[in-house]
Image 1 (cartoon, chains in turn cyan, purple):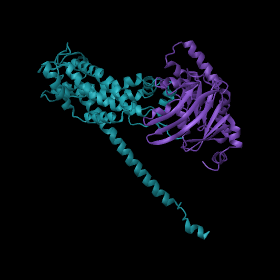
Image 2 (cartoon, rainbow over the protein chains, first blue to last red):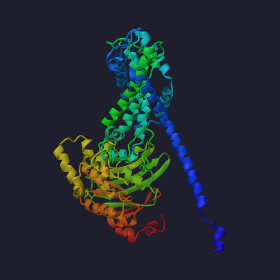
Image 3 (cartoon, each protein chain N blue to C red):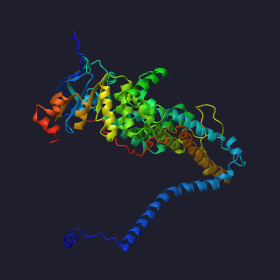
Image 4 (cartoon, rainbow over the protein chains, first blue to last red):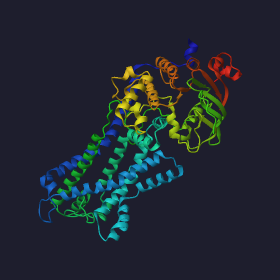
Length: 317
Length: 258
């Protein structure tokens, strides 16, 4: 017995030792919780501040009326709300198909060198300040067309969406286990059908989430719209006319010297936040999985699926 | 004119070598796989048996570094001929994988018919018929007939693997390749799969890769032993397990190495 204790020291099981460990555990857990809470705090602050400042200015007129001229109290942002919808819809027409198809190419077709360049370019482009985008489109579209326009505004937002959607789409498609691709190909299903019906369908929720993130991102863009869509105090009737947008209106009102406009800017910001959240929740509800209770956990950007994945090209065995 | 192919030979493999980059994974393999019989492929990990299996329906081509020499004829048809599409080869030579992989976005019935639907079959009645036939053949019909619309991933592991077999059978292939189909299953589910294999050889040619010697001995008619990318020995299963010609085969099947 003596020899035994010499080689393998007994584990202390006394209460004091255990109590110290428990204390450390509680400390670390509290610390981690506080860090997590810190993430939620800014969101709550923003919401609270917007509600307290902007809620009082939200009324029926805000949604139905055009802005009033300087000096007149009242009016609304109907044209800016509609303008934001029009701009992001037009931008999606460009950004969603190009971005999703580009992401499919990056994920599903192996042209190693080409893919590396596309990926690198997309990442660089993602980091380009949004005001630079505005200047590029100003030079390419606004100057030749001799005027600010809805088209230019939609174009700049659409261009910004492409690399965002492309990279998130690629990422979520890569999370689809290779076994599904192999199973489909082994059934004699053509590759493009396999990609659309198996891979994209499996990752649909993730693709949609990527599109939403891009939409939410560009819906709040102000800088690139300053010299493209420009803003408009009235309704826009043609794609070649300038158009109002919520962020632009908020910007213009916020830097004005009038209290009434400040209040409207707060209200506009509140609406913008609600709008973005509403798009988010709405599309999520629409794309809910048929089998959401039992399906393996859903593919979101940055979330890994805990399934064992076979190597895509088996060489073992 | 080519001579009439021998209908007793499902796959005639001649001098097949597969390279991944510069590495030869399979070296000059020549073998005749008998029709309507079970041929087991055995050998230690890394001996090239999975690569051999995947070359039989051109799945190894998914690896862009793969290169092939030699010839494979499926009932006389050269599957590597220039004008032959891999997609068509794979419709004739189906595959079941080690890890069951039913599509999670589809129901039980949709999984069975996916190969037909994505190749353009629309007729609902015909699809329903094929679903039942394939599920019966995979010995799964009685267990799932009341839950055809349930998600495929709600089935048990053994049921999921038999669903994958049904899915492969639904496109009516001539040959079924099975890559360790029972290695992730419990003994009871394994027994069911083995029984199924013996049943299926009445209609299909089956090539079965397995790590399990008993499984090879129980379920197969012929056994091929691969080692370091070469086919060491090939013959009737009883002979391979009782009186092999090669020392290495004997050592492997008796568990002395590998």
